[in-house]
Image 1 (tube, rainbow, N blue to C red):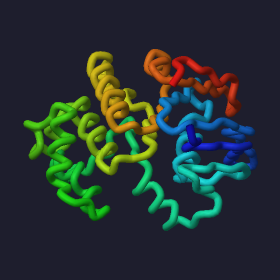
Image 2: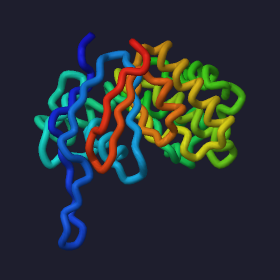
Image 3: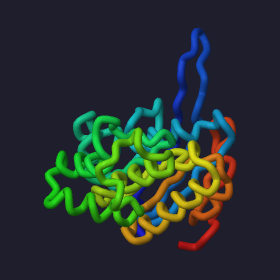
Image 4: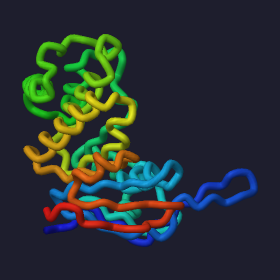
Amino acid sequence: MPKILNVEHLRKTYTSGSKQLTVLDDINFSIEAGETFAIVGPSGSGKTTLLGLCAGLDYPDTGVVELSGANLGNLNEDERARLRNEKVGFIFQNFQLLPTLTALENVVVPLELQGAKNPAKIGRELMGKVGLGDRLQHYPSQLSGGEQQRVALARAFSNSPSILFADEPTGNLDQDTGDRVVQLLFELNQEAGTTLVIVSHDLELAQKCNRLLRLRGGKVVSNEVLIES
């Protein structure tokens, strides 16, 4: 299978006062198209920083990130944004829905910006798949946390991404609600054939993936195959 994400010798440091803090140190791994891949580690191990670098939201100090065949280091901001719009989906811990838009509009607006045909039809279908066909005109403030995350799921899959980055997707949800969101995430992902990259402190969630990368202190401590893809 072709590699959809390739990371080589990635290093990221931040300056805090007079000190240099190394958040990631010589990170190497690759992900095949269609894989489900989890990144786990204790708080402060560099998980979210790594996700941002892989998605082209930030720049490493040294190292290479190749996403969907493109070397992110060779792209300017506009080219990175275009690549994300066309190839990448995101799910965040805090949902990041636009409060002034209805649930349906939160899913449809990104499609409209991309010039998709029949965006409202696609949006309604996705909202139906996540079990919110009766909540289309509700605003985020009128939805529970689980419902908001399901809207975010529908939005994430709306552009048929090649790769989906999920940063602590159940972090703000109770156990039962989180389990339902995870079930939907994997169902939608399998149906779409998307590559899924999950950052989580939840080992039970991570172990549902094909592979598991463990970080500690900014370094890779293991890269395990859990389920043959």
